[in-house]
Length: 419
Image (cartoon, rainbow, N blue to C red; front, side, top):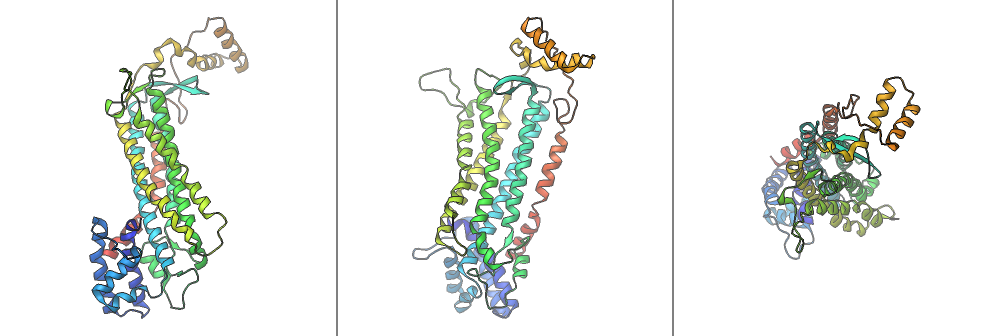
């Protein structure tokens, strides 16, 4: 798991070394030597060339060892004014910030796919259900658009998690600060953080809280994807028959030659449901811990880090599936859906002057006496309805949610650090 942190450890070291040079704990020449060596290491951490040698405790020790091997005593000075605690914390903050932005990008791609399919199929009607009973007319435009808006809301949870991760714990030491005149504001600026975790005790207490907040955001996205996957499983089945999946996204049966099982959607549903459990794992690990650092917190890495890979896999396959789903047109022409239009019939009577309760009773009687004729022409014009999807407003909300991350500042700062 520490290899995930390697590029971020280099970034943290660069910022810390720069700050040490401004307060006299490193000379300008020593800083330049350290910065040059760290910038050589950075591409290795991205390409997979960086390794933690046998007998070396962790990524932080490995980076310091390499600096010491290359620069002697100058390399040993990098740890001045810092504890392993705040070094781990800053690495985790940078890692989480980066991966959340990556998840935001993948979520946006699925959102854009949903909006495009919504516009493409806005005139293709679909049965709407409540209690798994046919209820009122819907459309594929409305269905795709609903999940797009759900992801727009989920983006707000990702933004909150990003902004919480985007606060600087460096300089908090082991949780009680330092007698060195550290400039925490400078390292905040160098690393592109939105701000400080000001209180040094609370900076350490953010361990666990950062992971839980991030996993809650991933769980929100996973919840939307799991529900979408369940709809696809239902709508692909013969009893519904609203859409078809390409062969590449289905499997057959070893005994029944007619089967086209929606295995990809089922696995998507299962993986997303598993992701929804992860915030509780963090909650339980952190339960009743007092302030300060505790080794229990190390266990959180194996909960947090693979979760990003899993949600990204889920988003990528969801996008692919949404691209290749085939929608069946003219579904509501089937007479088994006649009752979907009962509310349209009630509204028709109300518009002619009949009080609603009387119209409701009259249509109920027509249905019971088999004299009901469904009015299949729809006149839905209000905001967010079949005839007025307002996808442009949903897109504006998504744009605003992504703009709220402030990721450009972080990306520019990281780029400036590595030269």
